[in-house]
Amino acid sequence: MNAALDSDLYRNFISYMKLDSRLSGILHVLLHMAERREPLTSEALAAHMNANPVQVRRVMGGLREAGFVRSERGHGGGWTLDCRLEDVTMRDVYAAIGSPALFATGNRSENPSCLVERAVNSALGDTFRSAETLILERFDEVTLADLSADFHRRAVEAGHVWPKER
Figure (cartoon, helix red, strand yellow):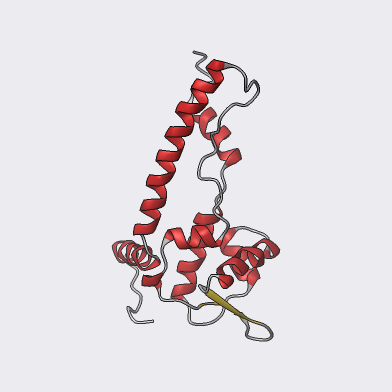
């Protein structure tokens, strides 16, 4: 195998180009929101996510429809949490943002009549479905409260201390 094509840098570069980081970004933002009492504007949230405020409003709209956040217009308005952290799982958030593809890898479909391609696609498809099932089950197990607790543990280890009651 070509060493250049087998390098970690090459694989990471190719994978990075296709990654959808909305779930990670929204979970990040929700945890920031949990730490704040005041509303956060779409612009402030966009800065946390390194995204465009219009994109943020679109994604936050899905979270609002799911009942996880609310928004208020006008001076002093913005987005606030509208749920208990213990009641929302990563899977809930994943569904609220449209259930984006979990894998950047897919089946080849250039020659659907090729029996080799069919065998490979069948094996890969079964594997992807099994892996997706496991990932979604794990998403069901992790709540925003779990993520917040992990954040607070890491903050204390790093020497930061926040009030426990919010």
